[in-house]
Image (cartoon, rainbow, N blue to C red; front, side):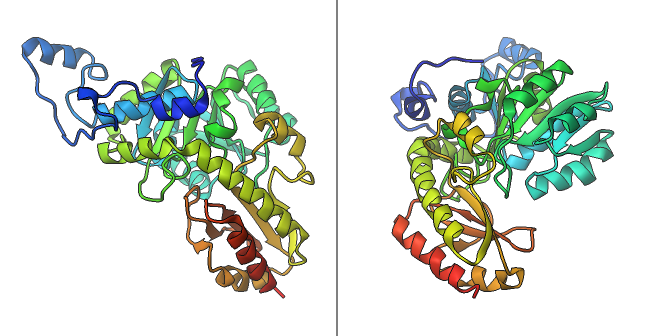
Length: 376
């Protein structure tokens, strides 16, 4: 694990290091290929293409600047950037699971992750066991000799359960397997899984890291042979991020701490309003003192911020459409982590998920109140 002594806000802005020609903003190297100086350069590239860049599917200076920042903010020796969050997940798990690997996965995952693990990964010769990771005995019982990794979201999507990461890490490492964490909901602002013993951390950078709803991107940070294997497979699959999208993520990352703090403060107020409203049966937000894992969330995050995501279930599921349609300030759209507040209808028949943006909190509170009133 890397230990960058600078504050997180400084790393978010300056983690990319020096830019060519003294550029303050990271230049976009919009080129597919890079010229070879001579035959010796060509031979060095053939020996180690990941070190000596020659083609943007393998390496690009703009992408490298993003990866330097990602490594700094995730406390990792190395990071890789991908064309989407799902590209990061699929490339990483394929690299880890080749030749008959077994995975243990949380039974609460983003729907695309769950479907890929259920329907597609087994076609590549891997096996997957889904486990309720709040039950540590069930986790212990799920390991096999071929288990390569345990994969989970620390703040689960969409129910915001908080998992006991330190215990999961301890059990997993006792079985010589890797801990792979999707930290998209929490972001490095709330906590950094590698600092708690995880081996690899993934973000859908489409969400909070980029932050403005314009690009698709994914990230992976970690160390050791696992990162080497993922980097090699990324080169062959072509799942690397584009230079333009890398530059957009760098720009978004610079304001990440400010945006997450604002969204977190607003989300807590929204959760308190929803919890007090008669239309809801349960509100999922780890910052509520009534949340089952509130104390665990406080230990993980320091108790100051708990993220911009919340969800709630309605007493009357048949009113879900009326509530969803009543929002005017929250944009009805999938995704999350945008500067714009979003409301999404998830798979659960009675649940709506909110992503707090950076608008005036009072406007968002008024909008949620009117929408919940539509349930009656």
